[in-house]
Figure 1: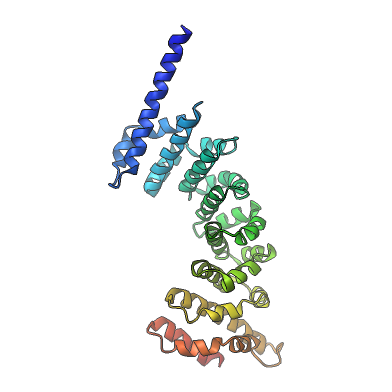
Figure 2 (figure 1 turned 60 degrees about the vertical axis):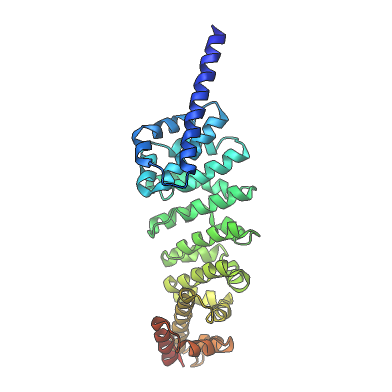
Length: 331
């Protein structure tokens, strides 16, 4: 009787493995998989059930299958979440699992973001642990998952801040791998689009100095995201917060990129410098800087004024117009 039971279980396991293998082969094809047919066949609830399978192989393949379905579109992602895939995935991520399983489950979690806000809070404790992983692949995927949680609303930004991850973000910005730094910058950039209280949280977490360092020294793609984060902070920050950014040395690296060919990047940095100039002008009018716009002087000393002069002749009308406006207003 026991032998017959074992044979039955082994046959069932083989059938499951064949089903999953066929599904994964379908998604590996270059042609677009017939996802609607796959979903209508009722495989999503079955794959969710398989997350608790005693077979490590079956569980891992189910994780990948759910991630692939969720990655097809937001509608598919919502459908997978609607069937209740998140909680068993989080439970799996909180178990001792193999490196391969941890990597794949973290990737699938990143495919589930952005979830509805009530589910964001469920994800944050797990992500808060995963961003401390020693495995660089897991770390990078977890950082991307964290960056996907935002949708421009301050309540999600606040939830991320309150989860206690900001201190770790400082360390991640100094990580040697661009695959970790890049998604971390996206997370910081999202947070500084919030209100001044949330920008203050970034300041108090000592994140500004690493941003300035990356803007000065990193490769272009990372430099660009660091510059965007600093510029966004000048857009939503108070005068005191912008003064702090200046004290951290952000003016020169913002000036140093004004000659770059990436016009979007130039536009963003020029806007950041204009915001800094506005604060310098306000200080001048308040009589606290001896009748001078000290920020304008620092930009001049960093050769920023010279670059802005050149931008008057830029083929991009938006850039040339902004350059002329800045020069006429502050010089």
